[in-house]
Length: 390
Image (tube, rainbow, N blue to C red):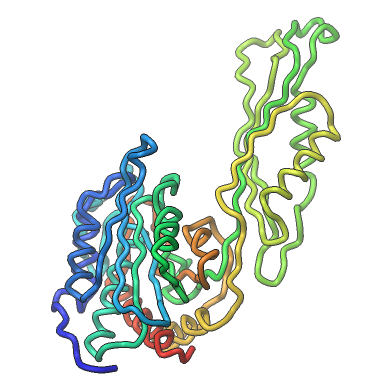
């Protein structure tokens, strides 16, 4: 490292920036000034910032996004996250957008998911720069479209970075990965997610004359039994077994003496790396075809499973977490999806952030001490990866 960098005093502690971000009610697709706050902080640290709004050309609400980079050399370490939040809902004791601190706890929508982690990463960069100029490059890839359909956020930003010739070596996604205690879990992959809607067709008729109708409901029941009668797989070293959950069974028939013309069901499959979306669709259709009859199947895959095998990135995270917390984190692929599913095609990616017990709930919160410890962990990770010593 070379000469010391003058660091704005208000960036040395993540609390101030976390509060400023929470006070922006950035419920998707609104930005509400959150990216302005973040950009100002990053420019104060010498980052070159670009705003990337998407969606208008497609007739969708405009989603604003931010890419910021400091440095031009390798290695290039990126932090990815989002400033958009889910609606606050009901049941709050604290104003969800006031960023109140009470008894050492910061309350507010986005405190844990994931404005707090963004502030901690900025504080980590500030601490690192205060020690001198690091080698390599640091960037932030921050979207405003993670909590909704993710059409105009990370995936489109990555397309822009590719067009600019940007190359990222490592990416840390700041999702709230810790189930109970800061440092207890890192995500090195995620299961894929498939949503399906099944419509089984028949012929409506009088229930007293079933031979004159074609009742679709027994076939619907048999089709659902065919996909829930056993496990999809047994899992493996890095993934738990895939799961299938029925989420809806609908007929919409108000009459007791009418055989309906159709029955519908919906289900979600969370699948490991033994499957992909195309393979699951083939498996489903084989099971349904074996039952027989007319049906329609609509499938949407929000992301295939992925895994970043243990290596330099996860090693740097484990070492930093252990140094700051004394814990050895679990390397996990559990939980839902995240924007890491897009980033995994670009570079090695792992997720680590705050404790997630209160995310999407009323009274979402994070311990202020956890914000500061996370900043120290991120600083260690940056120092290790940028030095090429992981």
